[in-house]
Image 1 (tube, one colour):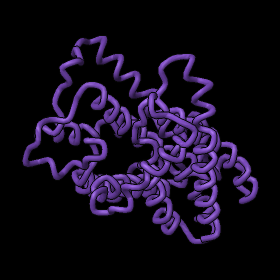
Image 2: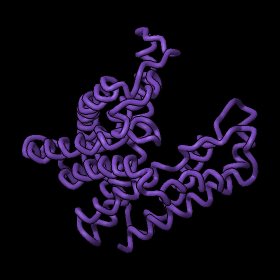
Image 3: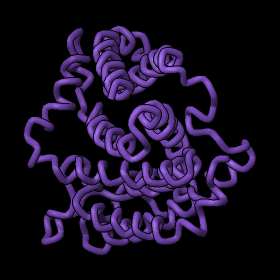
Length: 296
């Protein structure tokens, strides 16, 4: 638990530092073009955390690339991550079909469904998926998992990282209009981001969805000893998510609405049975795919 508490403390410190610096940094980048305040705060938090993670890694003796989940040779790692990226996109198709088929998501009237438009949103999804998966998996299923596993074993590492992974997905999802931004907006953003968690039933759908996703990704780390599969799956899911965000909008209220949370209109209770089926498939077929992805 000591390692987990260290990561938790560093995470809280990151949020406070980012809240303090968000407004000054926003003032510097705003003249360069229209930049949303929550995006500035989010990127700033990533940079601050990267610096703190460097110190924490040294403190917890996380020095080898294997400690961060990169235990495979580079070419083999890229091959496995790419393969599982394709599998991740394929596994997300039933979810996208459910959202579109039930009318929970409908085509955005402002999106023109041309070939170039689909290529554009696909490339945006790939860029976002790779960046998000690389960062989050290196931290959660990489460094944090390794540090906790040394003390408490792989399964407790999976059970401790997944809830924190889910909670942090609430950060910087709220918008603060440019005309309302002031010196205290960093702390306003922090407060608005996590206040919904004080009403658990209101956000249970989104929290449980992210928790389930985190547990599936942790399962692949436990079975393989590295994060190649986790990065691939995570990136593939984000690709489909970003494409839906850019090409669809929330549909009219209907009987299927309870299956999707109101937090972002995409994740919700429907992810729970999907995650169970996916985890079951990974577990039952582990004899086929784990040997190729397992770190020495």
